[in-house]
Length: 87
Image (tube, one colour):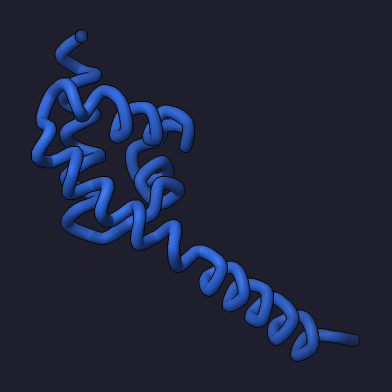
């Protein structure tokens, strides 16, 4: 694996663990696609640092369990904003 990929993988993993961020947030922060983040933390990280991979998996599992709540909140905010700014 190329050095720059390994550095990116470790950077993304550390960011996710430290900030409890989602794959989408990590992708935006590092300027890569969600698919790249997912591949980095689910496949490549296991080869580089299995312990860190387990920590990342725990954060992502929590995010996955909470995503329906986040979606509901986003929808509520969308309609709250549109009703306040209706003509």
